[in-house]
Amino acid sequence: MKSEDQLIKKAEQAVRSKKEKVESDYYRLNYHIMPPAGLLNDPNGFIQFDGDYHLFYQFYPFDTSHGAKFWAHLKSKNLVDWQELPLALAPAQSYESHGCYSGSAVDNQGTLTLIYTGNVKDENNRRETYQCLAVSKDGINFDKLGPVIENQPVGYTRHFRDPKVWKKDDDWYLVIGTQNTEKKGRILLFSSEDLKDWQLLGEIADSKINGLNNIYMWECPDLFTLNGKEILIGSPQGIKAAGDLYNNIYQSGYFVGSLNYQTGEFDQQDFAELDRGFDFYAAQTTVDKKGRRILIAWMGVPDQPENYPERANGWVHTMTLPRVLELNQDHKLIQKPAAELKKLRKEEVSYHNLKLKNEKIELNSISGDSLELIVSFNDLNASSFGVELRASENNSQKTVITYNSKNEKLTFDKRKSGQGEAGTRSCALKNNGDLKLHFFIDTSSIELFVNDGEEVFSSRVYPDPASKKINFFAENGSVKIKEMRKWKLS
Ligand code: FRU
Image (cartoon, rainbow, N blue to C red):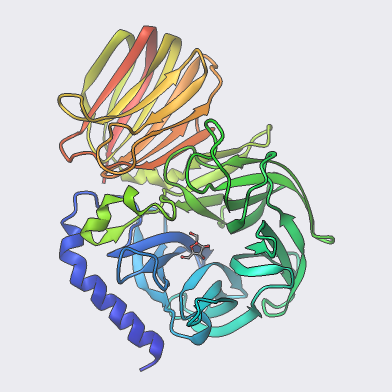
């Protein structure tokens, strides 16, 4: 038996042995991608191939820690119903002995081709990195072709990983995260005619964002064109919190700019975080046959194991929902939940024109732990107002979303959400006289799209199963709920 097959068998067995415990966990999600057991982290190889969407992810089947990663594999016709496929990559070869790390997928004339990082550590914990190819004709079974880039170019350390590849005209391009020998983060751009022989074009991001100069590593870059601009996505490590910005241990965000493909120069504007919530990292995009640029991310962050109590039940982490990206006139990325998600909607309940004045109310049939809720506020004459989600009967447990119309700030408050990380995340949001909050609530997650994708907050939450109330409030004045719509999601 091939060593890959042996490892995959072991992985499947480990998953089976934990199945009962994992499935007994209330915090298993209803409509998000999660590992069958063990650990999920970065989305990898996101692509539409032969009509189907394929998504792979970093997977450690044996434990809820970050061990030698496999690539798990799912496919879907509609971005909503995902079918689990056999594990695509197992870390069986010498050039990937400590993990088939993150990477991407391309369609090379009908061959689904994965480009990923083979991670190796020797007896002295010295790292080696190999950028590797694996190919498939049927989109299910992969043959490894081995390394095409061995270790890093001169001037960089072996923190050199996460290739994202795309084609422009007749050439292939690759962005990859790394660190230079001064321990400063860099994103490098390479090109190739055949996916095998790669030339370094240059550095397209350094250790600075917005006047801060602490980045020691960039992980999981991505680069694509939207509305004639190049968008460079990346996950920097080393940036310290600054007010409401950069409050998670590591961030995931983007630059808008112009890439000169000849010189490899990237002329970039400020860096902006993609998400304002607690749990968001390693975002990856693809473009589909409809021309949509779709993003999906790990709804988690590295190096914070205590934040995720489902570990006690033998599994950890989930993906965000897929979001469609647009670039607005101010060069800001707008993120909208994929329209296909409407397929999950059941039993609509709606309300119109409710005035809230110095009060907190609940509404018939508006509660639950697996639902979509859209609330449009206007006539904003209260100093603050908002929504409490996953609230308990006695109101001691709740996740509170508050808009402060005086200081123009939206806050996601997880201090009383239950288990897991406690704290708040906020972002500036102009008071334009109305506010639309669009929530996707699952058993242990909340994703909030603000004003049709102007901001997004993604967070895991761990309230008691019985905490299912939703309350609406206005303080120091009144607001109107112009419209509210709610669906159960299954
Ligand atoms: C980001 C990351 C990547 C690496 C992968 C390993 O979360 O650290 O840089 O390829 O995870 O699982």
